Length: 314
Image (cartoon, rainbow, N blue to C red; front, side, top):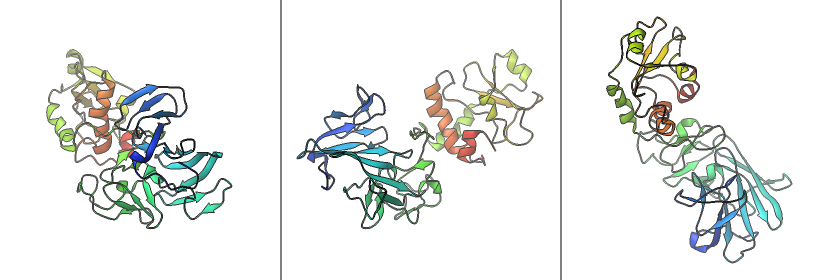
């Protein structure tokens, strides 16, 4: 797009679009893998997004040699806009925790709004400078107040507060569609949403019926003791430091014993749960077992917070 012009509003106006992939992975708008290439800008036939729809660059059909592109931060927020004419940083962006933006020119001078007409800012969402609201597809978001302007269309799936943004934790979550928030890794990549519903996750415990009564019985039946980090998540709270986690030969049933090996631990923080997939299938185990635990805990009675479930500290 030409310097000083407004950003193109429809994909039909674009001659080409790019995907910048920090390395060599390229995806189309449906997240389908396209090609491998050298670590530079590549052009594809249609609008391209990096994984979770974080918009990367565009070129205006009428000015095929001039375009602007983006550098993204950890939440997918636009950190800077760069230009080919002249080559270099055109604008920089910084945000408070809830997305209020400060814009500066290449010399660090503050701007009231984007001089290059860039509408994409906090978490890659479109910002309206007039209303100072972000468009999150399902509804509009007010960064000054840290709330959406309308109720969550999905109801109480994330919170009892139907207007809250990311459960009032905008540092670790994003909400790309304005309906339900998602966890973000410290490095910035999005953790996939759990592959099961909350109800299916909690009901899994009805399947965890095979639990040897003691450690000795578990050994005799061919169960496997886990150690290290896999034990830590079942050793939370005072008096649980020496709990032992064992899994069945299939890797699906779990049981946690206290330090004596004679008693099964059943409290909602440290209890054993059923695995839909064993740890020998790491990606399925992550999506069907680990992520639901991080998001919802072991049961409705689990008092831990999501970050405690990541760190194993309660």
